[in-house]
Length: 286
Image (cartoon, rainbow, N blue to C red; front, side, top):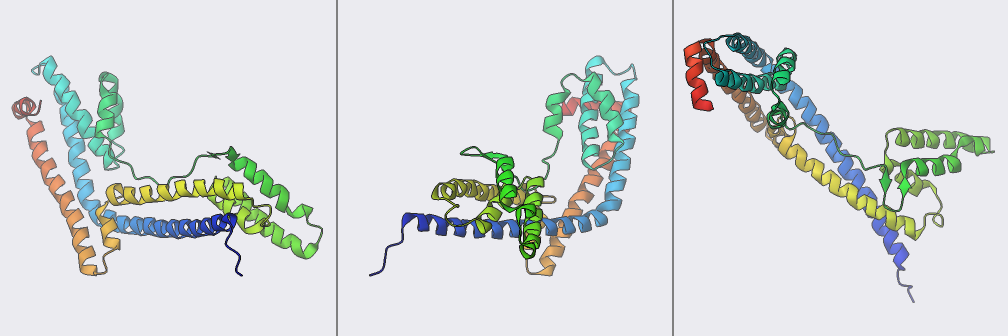
């Protein structure tokens, strides 16, 4: 008669399954991130001349607006509006990675007490790397505590047999690397692989399964971030397109958007260069 599977075996089987899922998702998303970086670098290289021209125009316009701030023909209200416009434009220059924006922002933000709220609205969504779990998980198991437990159990100096000491040294390097990277998942995996089945208790399996469920949720959230906010997020779609023609179309589409921004910048420069046209523009936008 076959013995039924006891609950602890079911828990451990589910635990193993989730470990493999995390490993797979981690690898897939790291690969995706690298592909995004490569494609972003290509687009950045092709966009470089457009971006440079945009930044030069924006810098010239900011310099001109700075001159207008000293023009007594503009009323106090208008000068306030010019300052607000300049902050917006300086953040746009900063977004393009132009260091010349800093000098304008330092001066303007000192003058504008309300700039903190504007800074939050103007700043773009920043691409974030995959999230990492906090150092402490439910049950008060900390990375440092787990590291010490593993180091104590597997330190090569405590291995009397010379032929096993090399294996312990390799394992200890993995444990130390996981700790230095604050990689709780890596430490859990090493513990699971190297401790005896009796020592890896049902309570610990249950605790780690809760952690793993949270980690899987984080990976899904990160993937959603890549789709929505990744560097040139349309590139995300390129990776899943098997047709090179579609990838090329998407790259051209990104460059086309930059060209449109450049044309708008040229129009804006014509407006801000003349005092009268700038005054009329301020009435329209404020």
